[in-house]
Image (cartoon, rainbow, N blue to C red):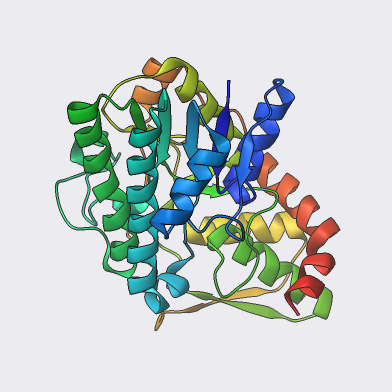
Length: 312
């Protein structure tokens, strides 16, 4: 099968590509330097070059709370434009299936816990990441509309917060797990007595190891052909304060954690109902949080210096 992976050189995309290759596939990996998906003409050229039968649309512009606050317009426009162009070119090319990845940030700020897919439209997302979340949520409507009018088989998946090897460890744009790992390793190596983290540590989050997410996407491509969104996660939540303590233990940071309550902490709670994924995809996350953190820390310990040099 001819498979196209947009964002295939990115964090999640690279793991999906690895999994597909391990199973004997040879996916077409679209890179931004070659095909800027914000541009309709470049997207059309990509589909002409790849001639895909199956598409994983994983390209995105995304970051943590700070990056979302600094780039609301950019993240809204880029993610909406890329999704619109991929949907339209998928329709024009007559692809057999398109796997579209949404975001946990699309859920309303006050969603009852655990988050169920039927609650996706029950309110406005948490303000610090609302433009990104709204753009991704709008693509679900587009996917369902294209299915109804054109018969395009689009499946829409909602991963919770991802982490793992090859994550973004740039403190300007990183999410909470890589940011914690880098801050604590840097503080440990510098002999610093403390690290400063945003908020008060009380919000909760759910984390899914990136290789587990890649497995879920491939399972969805094989097993699911429905129009309803599907949560991808573990169904387990942890407070940011407890997560920080766990990362400190894994990294060997023995200093003090200081909380800057003048900074936002984001949505109060996040935990998914993952029963639909288990029922429809046969997917259940396999990687415990501590084991995943240990693998992530090991990867960053090996590659961190190289990443820092490349960023300079």
